[in-house]
Amino acid sequence: MDEQPAVRTVFGRTLTILGAFADAPDAGLTLTQLANRTGLPMTTVHRLVGQLEAERVLERTTGSRYRVGLRLWELGLLAPRAQGLRRLALPILEDLYEVTHQNVQLMVLDGTDAVVVERLSARDAVRLEGRTGGRLPVHATSGGVVLLAHADPEVLKAVLAEPMQRFTPATITSEPQLRAAASLARRQGWIVLRDHLTPGSVSVAAPVIDDRRGVVAAVSVVADGADGDRLVPAVRAAARAIGRALRPSPA
Image 1 (spheres, rainbow, N blue to C red):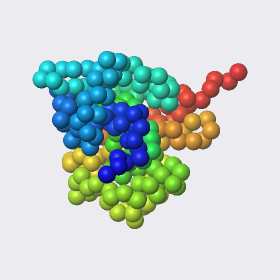
Image 2: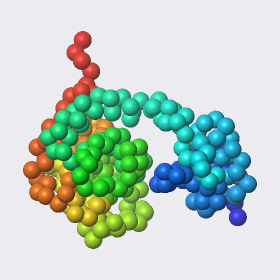
Image 3: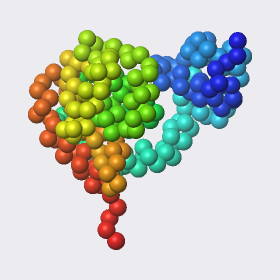
Image 4: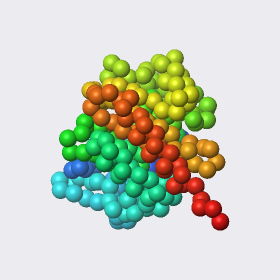
């Protein structure tokens, strides 16, 4: 059977291998695990992993395991959409963290996923899914719903075309629920979700709007199951402040 079109090229196969590390343990993955995760032949995995190791994109750990190397992190820093945004937003996110002492996140939309550009977390804050640089499902996160609310309609169609994974009993898993949540987020300018991705948590998010009135990111705070409404003013203020920071200074 032919491989899927997305992985027929060497570059496509390479991206498939790198994508397998999205939720890998710190100890790394073996070649067998990479082959199982990617569906690629072992000979292909062995050859490409060897090339990636030579270029320092992957590094070998103990027990013939591999993990993402610093070279890939260096290349990731070249992405201006994430890094420029992160640099301008970080002081404001730190202020929001000082006010809330909870999990503070900055997300952008990439395809049908929400990518966590930055995350600040208190030691005793509720434990979150994913990590900085990782992807989260838009249907199960407040930041994702906010981004979806302002995205091109084709993005919503793409999200609805695939099954929506249920993480908790409260997770949005139907088209009416997702459309209603996105509509509410768009209409009022923020959204509060409870227990949608992490049990016992409340998540509040608001959009970051640039000088062209476009939503470029979302700010969210994830806390324990306390009253999320009290977090709304701080989250909205931080989102507005980041939006102002993104606008060019007057000549």
